[in-house]
Length: 226
Image 1 (cartoon, rainbow, N blue to C red):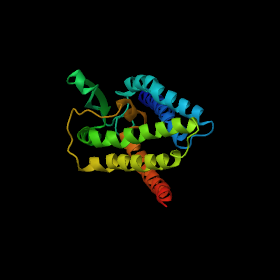
Image 2: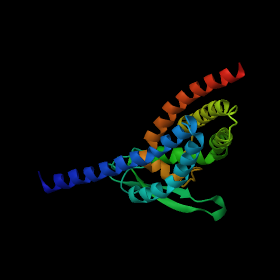
Image 3: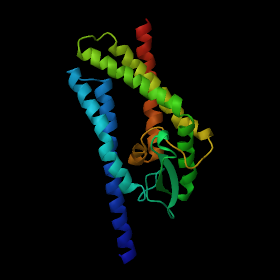
């Protein structure tokens, strides 16, 4: 094996380690959702554990983002090929002025879809935030009530949460296809989550899980109405 081949193999091994770590960090998210949606007994413990994981996740995901944002493609999660180009996101609250620019590496052919996706999220930030955070707050309230002994609102709230969030993530996963790429744009959700699996893989999670949740949520709501 030549020196170049050895360097390439070492580089791929290093990238694989970062990709596996990204998967491990991403699994925090389905774990939190499991604790909130399935809420194994005792519910108070599930609720507390889910909140701690949800709040604490950023403290490990942000350093990961900083470590990999120039190592792997933000869109496909692989090594940027044939060479890295850059895409710029805005992060930070709007009240902080123009926001801080976050630069990430992408494959040349993946710069446009990455910019298109973030631009769509920015334009649709209000309905997307409402579609995620309102059902989440209702679910947290229902879980707190159930932990205190009032369980009658829990099942319908779980069904509503799954249905609305399922619709919302599918709007994000398909709506961006009709958007125009604008750079820089500001995502309405923490940017570090995009770097765990890469945007393209994350969108497939949105589509598949979202469709499943729409069906399960609609069935649960139908039972409530009956």
